[in-house]
Image (cartoon, rainbow, N blue to C red; front, side, top):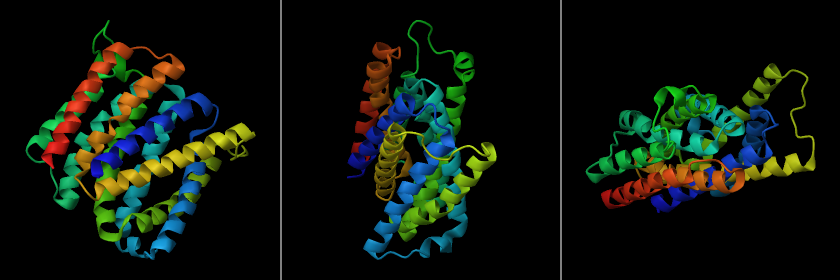
Length: 287
């Protein structure tokens, strides 16, 4: 079950990146984030109420909730900025470091580590996703890669995502997914709105056309689905496993980037997809 949920989250994330690049590059990242967070807040308040979960229970772990808010805000902003202005078939592979980042905090917070062949699966998956960003004609040039703004934003998002996933696992095991996410979004919505006003005083916080409304609703729905599947998965398996499978989004994103935006490197990057499939198989056998 955890594998299917993580794979579903990967697919939803890939489509999210494509929606931002194809339809929302003219919108400020905070506008995109605010709409997604507002939609998620309504959905998780309803889910918490329908399931009879406590709205106050997550605040018994208030420090963890505050940490999650910070990590989520950083991750969403950096990923949105990278997707809107960069090459999505490069942005997604750079997120490959998140399973490695998640190992240490996951062990610290929940005393959970990969075991046996699971370590092999994490390593192979990371190698596969990184290889998706290689240029066959010029090889892997770290300096050139790190000179790109989209790479740096994606790398920062990966670090934030890895830490956030470990915090998510710690809190959701204790209080459940709906109540935890309600607490997160109750704080995130006004915080993002305030940041938008500070960065763009006097600018409209909403879309200017029906097309923009449809784009923001689609992106918000995909973000909601991806988050729900991701957090349910991390209650069932170690974060490094879930994040490794979620990096299959790189495969989907490379293909989408090629088909929709004519981005380069399809043939070379498919080799990375094979490595990722092998890594995912290792993770399944490790369970």
